[in-house]
Structure formats: C-alpha cells, structure tokens
Length: 83
Image (cartoon, rainbow, N blue to C red):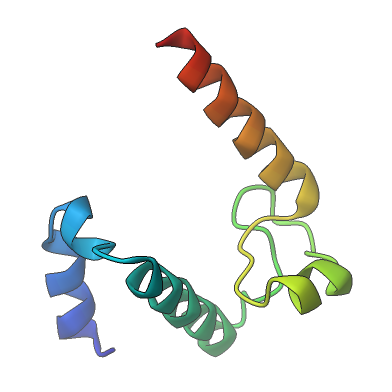
C-alpha cells in the first residue's frame, strides 16, 4: 500500500476498514510489514519493549508485548462490564 492509499484507507469509517475477518488480518499483516520497513518490528507499540520471539513466532503481526496485550484485554473486559 502506498502513502496515498494509506491516507484514503485511514479516512474511511472503521466499519469499512474491517469489513471481514480476512480484511482485518490483511490490515494487521500490512502494518507488520510497515514496521519491518521502518525498523520498529518486534517492539511493543505501547511500551517500546522487545516483543518475545515466542510471541512473534505465534503471532507474527503482534504489535504488543504480552504484558501490554494482557492489560489491553483486561481493559476491554472492564469496559464491557461497565456497560
């Protein structure tokens, strides 16, 4: 995806971004490729720590380390329980 396409994609409403599970997966893979290109692949986007090799082997497009992913999941559960 080139920069112009990324800008168009970013401008779409979220429902258009992820119309399907496969679309969401392709988005995550594209983001992982972008992180490889810019040298940030393997670093947690939240805390900046290295993502473990085991996690990257299991989820190659992971953007969060285990600790940050667990916190994200806990926050989602709390948010769902508040509604």
